[in-house]
Image (cartoon, rainbow, N blue to C red):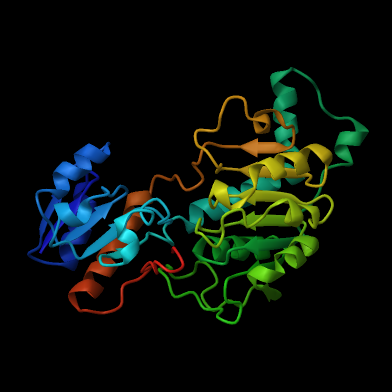
Length: 335
């Protein structure tokens, strides 16, 4: 078996992978462009570990049987020939759960305790301690969090929110199927789906929006979720609600969201993803006081490849044993 990784593996990561498939040939090289990935794939392989995939990969690598993505989403690879499903694709869903769940809670805490406003006052050398400001500070305890997309990230967010004393609601494609069948390290997430007080289906999204003080949007971008939250949904949102989007920018109608922030229907937003990235300099979102904005980095952490290697090794053992792979993408649903 030949495995190629389009990232440079550290010795400890190579050791984890090699232990899973003794005797396999492992070739790794940092590829920063599609052209570099194409050249590497052209050398032939059975399995691929990568962020990027060339559009003509089936021609370049006719023996390729399985691709392990280093991303949680697969929308960037399913728009081309791989949509046919002839090559198995698995994602790294689960390795981002801790980092992104912590980011989400950090955004909510920043908003609730008005830290974003305090930082802006600090930059202006202003002592922000008015009665009006002090009375606007809130607690998370006793508030309701609606998790839109109850996958690995949503479940870890729910676990942390529960620890803060929040009531959790969850929306997922099939609310009757509550178990998490993806990669989930022990002690994290909500494997059995027992945390939410109530589950909602996609057609009930206005209902969960009406009931939630905070919203965590963790949806993948697919043909079924594009602009999942638009003008109608934002019109149904609970007054004073704060929204955090760490899924994909395209699942929210950005124009409608900007309007909802401007007219107060939406009290604030923590945004790590956008319809078009980088976010255009002229976007009105840059200057909205109650927007906490970051450049698609909520999943970043120093242990990223540690967890990615563990997941890949687990799937390699399954691949060799002809067992079901974890996080296998269903082209029908796009994740």
